[in-house]
Each structure stands twice: as structure tokens, then as C-alpha cells.
Image (cartoon, rainbow, N blue to C red; front, side, top):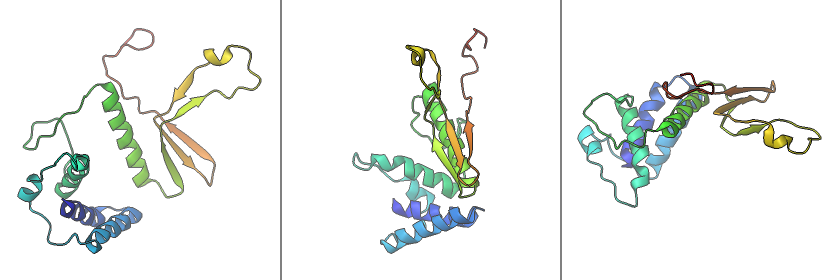
Length: 173
């Protein structure tokens, strides 16, 4: 299985424009080679023939990502020749997928002085609160936070990914 990952890292290392990311891919690919992952790139038939036992089932996502990188394809819901087990596509799963995609995009395209952090809870900054006020004040769970240390800038990204038919706060859609 690791031949697929090594080949994917080599492929991406040549194609991406971000030099830091390209270098990381090449270093990882060479690291796999030094650990004994040798040979030519596996054929599509070999890649599709990979089987997962219960001890390596956690590698399924990594192998699927490597296949996408090697094929230069994107996952869609359109009918195609490769099928994947569909996870629960309720709002939570889809929101998390979109958040991870947006966060990953920013990690790749922003300069290294930016820090990309996954969502966390933000609360009001309250000094000397009156009894019960903390139970009334709202809080916010961010999707993605971008921090720029040199300038002290912070950007909070809310992906606003929701079902278009979900009722809003005031009953509208």
C-alpha cells in the first residue's frame, strides 16, 4: 500500500506551486524510499486491488486520498466507476468536511507566518459579571481561525454551510 502513497507524494511534489509544500512532499516520498518502499509506481489495477484487514482499516482514507492525488481527481457525488462507502451525510458530517477543506486550502496557500486553527469556542470578555449574566450571553464556535503573528491580525472564517431548506432563526429559509 505504501507504494501508492509514495507515488502520490512524488506526483504532488512536482505539480504543486507552493515550494514549501512541494519540498515536504518530496521529503516524505524520499523518507518512504529510505525505509524500503521501493519499486515502480503501482498500476491502477494494483491500487484498486488493495484490500484492508481490520488492523489497517484506518489507512483506507489515506489510500483513498493518495488515489485521488495520483489520478488528479476530485470526489463528487456524480455517478462514476469508483465507489466509496458513503458516510452519514447529515449536516454535521458535511459541515466538518467543508470546514476541513477550507482550512486545508488556507494552510496550503497562506505564507508560513499565518497559523490556521480549527474551530473553538469564543465567549464574551466580561469583567466583573453580575450574577447570571454569563448564562445569558451568547458564545460562538468558530469554524476556522487564521492568526498572523507579525501583525497581530486574526481572521475568523465561518463557512456558513447549511442545508438550504433549514429554517433560520426567524422561521425563514
